[in-house]
Image (cartoon, rainbow over the protein chains, first blue to last red):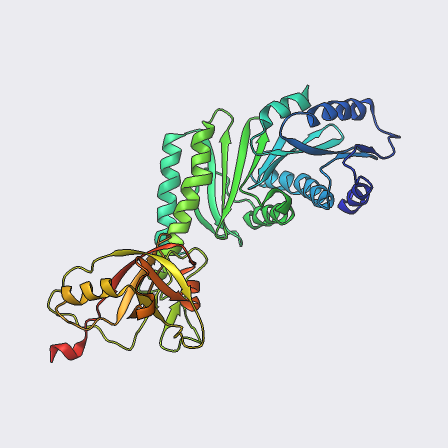
Length: 134
Length: 273
């Protein structure tokens, strides 16, 4: 999925609600992972998440005009971090964490699905990773 | 960066390797891939590609407030990447490595060393800092250093220094609060100092003419500029230094901030004759 597609989907989620676009063709893992993320979203410090499957995406992000920025970052993180890992001889990437001045994001690939969870810097990302992997 | 900078960086990461042997690979490199320092084998990767990938993420990370650190967790090792002053640090450590030590290296020590080396570099004789003239203040030149410069110096090069002048008393340092002054009648390169303090300086230096002061901010930015005693009408203002906008910009400070001020005595050749 291209970032543009994600951004277009994100535009439709103005009120921060969860949006599921065409769940056709997704496996059972997609649905259960989505359910897990919905629970993670309720944790203190978690500001939103993006999950992209083969044909579908679920976004639950804060309101405002930043939704496309979250989507672009999520996409870029998936693309670039695997290349960095490859260059440095780390073949199997389990998770990627980017810490900024305001927020941090973890990005993971679970089967066919790519997940990015955005959170406050004080949030416990280790426990969130564990919950995603359950 | 000069060769001695590379040696310094190499020493730092070698030390960390000895503290944390779990650090299997560590490299400091430039955007073009040039290695400044490294440990570990197989560092022949396409480093410019690593830099480009990091930049691509950083470009999209405005929503996070930029990228302070990128951590990639693998099955048996983890990568940490940071960027400081166009230098990239990539550290690969096994998962058993002490996270605090690795973070100290990637987030604190190496970035600090890089910043310090960048600050020191312009001061080296072989690397004179670029000078940019300030058009409004005709008598002064502002020394502009690279992004992380510790000091901005306003100097008056037309007054040559004499090497063997009689020793003068150490200039007393006085703390003042900044007040901004402006207007048509205000010279943009002259600050106004509490007249009582000026009188004390003149006493200290035996009536010697003092024309300049050195102002230093709490952020260690300094400027040397001309001064006048404060006007009669402002004499009631104690502990205040009045500084024009142009000099405030050079010092990167503003009204209400504290500065340290001391008289600046030029050693004139004429005095020798």
